[in-house]
Length: 215
Image (cartoon, rainbow, N blue to C red; front, side, top):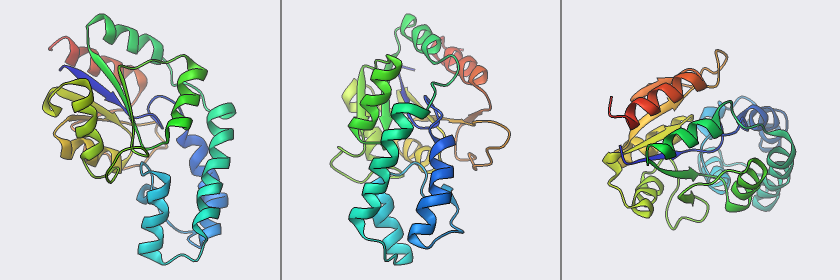
């Protein structure tokens, strides 16, 4: 294993714990899809979420209002509400000691990512935002293929840590070993597409360090 690509939302920070209630209580009623399964959109770039919902369900919500809701809500979530998941700094430090290249690959735009990186003092060898990527985002594989190219590794020599169905599919299609990270016992997202499912931060650490050590 030459590199690890971390998703941000739900992997480094507990933002899905905030996004999902906001989406259920505010966004889904706004677009008239109160019964939508959030796994259908989780992990996608917010601009592509609008395109997907409009193409699939012919929503009548104005695009500008839809994107504005996400941008306003993100300011609160990333700037004030999210917490760094347990052991993140220690895990990244342990991987750096093993000379593993670290990348952040997120569907969030760079300003949301930068808020998290600055607030929690996180650094990566490469930061890739699907929002700035010239091509379709997750679940398409291009953003992970681009991340591998950015850090100079073959995708088959990289590990991706993802929590969403779309993220797992994206990294898997790129050829990476995919670790599906589960937030807790209440998290029922189907991660059967992952090569390994980590049910806790401790399990994630154990698996990644074992891969880094060639075990």
